[in-house]
Amino acid sequence: MLRWALIFFIIAIIAAIFGFKGIESAATKIAKILFFVFLVLFIISLISGLVAK
Image (cartoon, rainbow, N blue to C red; front, side, top):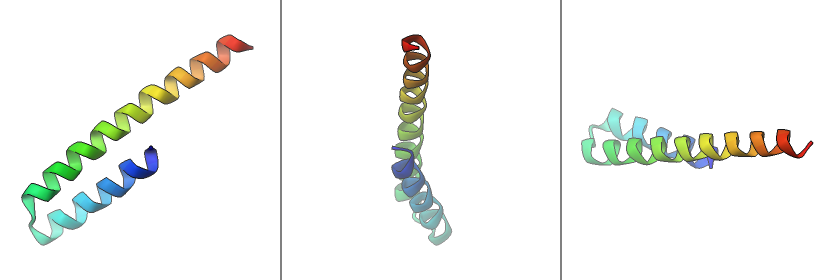
């Protein structure tokens, strides 16, 4: 999931360089959503790993 967030972030940077504002903002929003979903799942996994031991 973090890989997809980085891919969309790179797409957003490239779109911003070439001036595609619509694509840039959409890719940025998708990257943010994917990053926060990854972060939540990582924290849940970390906590469940600590509780299981």
